Amino acid sequence: MNTEKKIRVLVAKPGLDGHERGARVIAYGLRDLGFEVIYTGLRQTPEEIVSAAVQEDVDVVGLSILSGAHLTLTRKVIEKLSEQNANDILVIIGGVIPDNDVPELKKMGVSGVFTSGTSIKDVGTFIRSNLP
Image (spheres, one colour):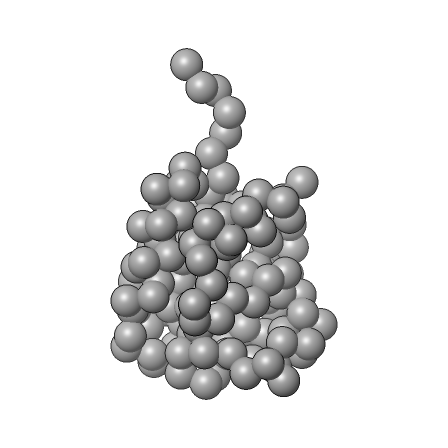
């Protein structure tokens, strides 16, 4: 029997973005790679995302954002994680993210940025190699 703790990943769609295909593909793909995945569904507030992350005791929060509001929404999620003393949760983001915004996202605390076309295997490998 495998007693190794599964890595828990919360996949969230913050803001008003109504397109969830990519988030669902990532959620199912990570599950197939052996991760335990919680998908929050559409139109989640930063507060709802952080509340779910803390309640579910996740290792990773993955934000899927296509709306163009990635800087604002990600900053709010990271601020709320900090308020909950949950700075140990790895934050990654995927979606339509301009290259010019990647340094700002990293500066605010995002560990990884994945744009369209990134393989799910690469996301899984990144998560495993960036958790303690």
